[in-house]
Length: 126
Image 1 (spheres, helix red, strand yellow):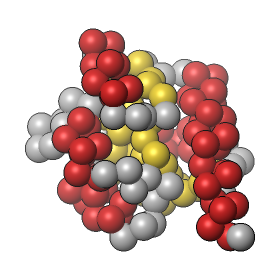
Image 2 (cartoon, rainbow, N blue to C red):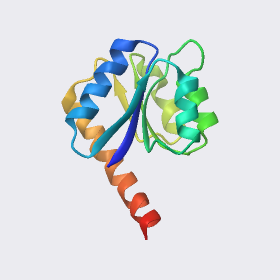
Image 3 (cartoon, rainbow, N blue to C red):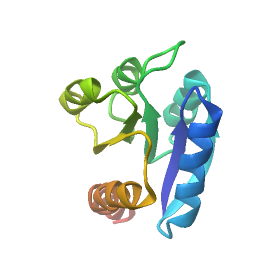
Image 4 (cartoon, rainbow, N blue to C red):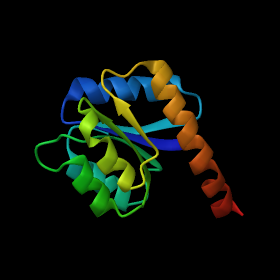
């Protein structure tokens, strides 16, 4: 199971991601939060494998979050602003989801994350 966290300053958006995570058999919801600092604490504690992260947040942008996080988990960016895609890919994100997000598009991104994260989890076990 891939441990996931949904982070968006708009609670309805993080709730949608949380619902999608719950529908996906290989994903496990660790939490959904509107507070990026709370999310950073979970990442720093090693409790998260994958973060679904909004880019435009008032306290801390998704790009700032990525830089602080320093590769401790994989990230899929979620945003309504397509112009931020290049910034995210420069920081080695798994995928970029443009809002509104359909479950089919979410699932494709989740599969992509699984292909990256599952081999890393196997290395840790071995």
